[in-house]
Amino acid sequence: MPFQLTPEREKYADELFTRYPTKRAACLPLLHVCQEQNGWISEDVIEFAATRLGLSTAQVKGVVTFYTMFHQRPVAPNVVWVCRTLSCEIRGAKVIQEHLEKRLGCHVGGTSKDGKFSLLKAECLAGCGQAPMIQLNDELHENLTLAELDRILDAVAAKTPAIASPSSSVAASHTPATSVAAAQSAPSHAPESTEAKE
Image (tube, rainbow, N blue to C red; front, side, top):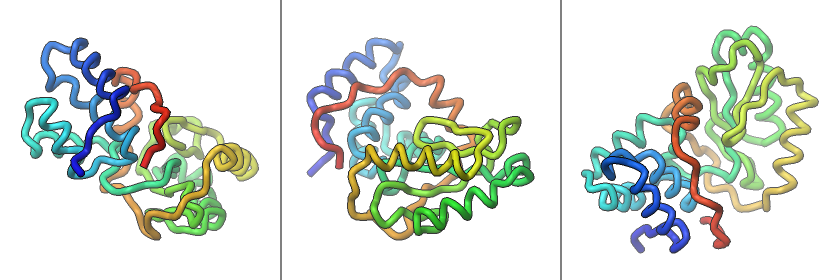
């Protein structure tokens, strides 16, 4: 069945287009809305967005593959990015990564057995002065200790229902070096739908 937005998100998408001089300019926020509903950017989502924006699927896919905030494969409800650039590496990023792999029961590029977390690795998360750090969904957590990391994961896990892991090795195509700044410049996402996400 072709991808379609829920009526609530469809209404929000229509409102988005009024904020921009052309529909094409609304590509990033529209993709965010689609990903919030679908969990990732599938080929059906790309076709839907291309039709709504008056673009080719190749043009939309070019955006999806450039910005690392868009997942090109299914991921868990919570995505953990581990920063492994030099500043974080010097201050213990390897220990953070190994702790996450042990706790979640998967390697980088994989998803925890309870389906709550996907673990990915980034070259830089733009917080070099506060290393070591992770990005958990849309939030940065800096100056981490293992105890603080466990506290953060416990709080998020408690709010997330267990689901079947989509894959034992689920990874995005890029690392999120550009994702934080781009996400901050995009308009607010659509309000959460009362319908369950896939």
